[in-house]
Length: 426
Ligand code: ATP
Ligand code: MG
Image (cartoon, rainbow, N blue to C red):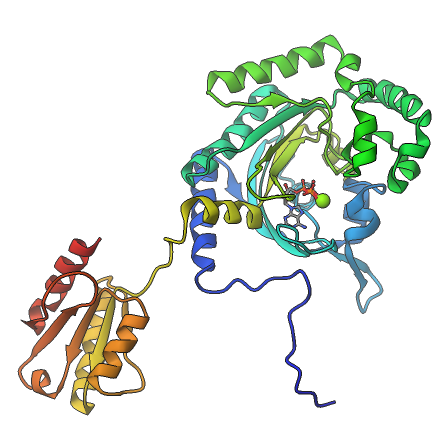
């Protein structure tokens, strides 16, 4: 059916246009470098996984599994899901390829995730996460390391003012005792709970700590705290983590109400937030998930990691650093006349061979027009080849920003002249 209406993108799924992508590239370069600095290696897993993977890892009674997954049946009748997060995929791949058998792994990933949420600023249906997963270590040392990776990433991006909150969810037994106490407390106030929380009260009361409903949150202020239920060893581990963080000057606060929206966390959890992005202030979150590897069919392997939302991180970079990242070609090559165009094409390639970014004038036009294009593309320098210079093997070099007169240099000196000028304008 013909229609003049343009086809639109899917709601909550964004195009990243030139001008924005430069920020993404800068952040991606930084996270790659920081991961490498700590010995983490990149893993790439498919965007589509068997639906079962997420039911078995994230948990049935979570927002993600209950209402946010893009699930479909393929032509074979298999239920598949666009990944809402990548920890489960890393663990699946680790098990599948024997990466966790008698060895430890420090892994990182970056890529798109999909959740069917209500789109708003900082909350999208396709969004991107950078994450690291450390598989095979049980102690607080690795937990401190994970935090240090995040901290170094913020520093390398020049981001300031993030708040780090940490908590510990304790062992399974401590959690079970706490679950009973919390359920008992909340059962006395059922009417004040939001509908989701009422539903979760019986089977998964800890999930309620993660509720965003203000009424429920108010009720939780007076709820019993998990820290009262921890064993001595768990207290000691959490204390040690705090010492390790203090030793490398990482600031944090303990928030005993912090839980995570996914069921697989055990023990230590944390979140970095900012108050500079409005309601969507969570930038990076993670913790320990010692049960997951086994839950997905491997043996028992302790593990910890985090996931960082790149849209929010990049919004913060843009906000704090201003719009200074746009990269433009440094040299524009103007050519006037057919002979000049041939020479210009050759000179452009030679400059590119030497590592100079060159944008050619395409579509001909008079000098004025070509120089306007040079200006519009943000070049620092125009090299002009016209019929006059084409016959003399000289070229004209015209600075486009700041001071500097147009000069004429010989073809052999062009690269040198360009270098000298670009160095000056840096
Ligand atoms: P929130 O509480 O904001 O819903 P979450 O607890 O669901 O976050 P995680 O599953 O822990 O988030 O994912 C880690 C990070 O990924 C978040 O801290 C956030 O920065 C980012 N993130 C999560 N969901 C989205 C989304 N729909 N759009 C953009 N970023 C997101
Ligand atoms: Mg969420």
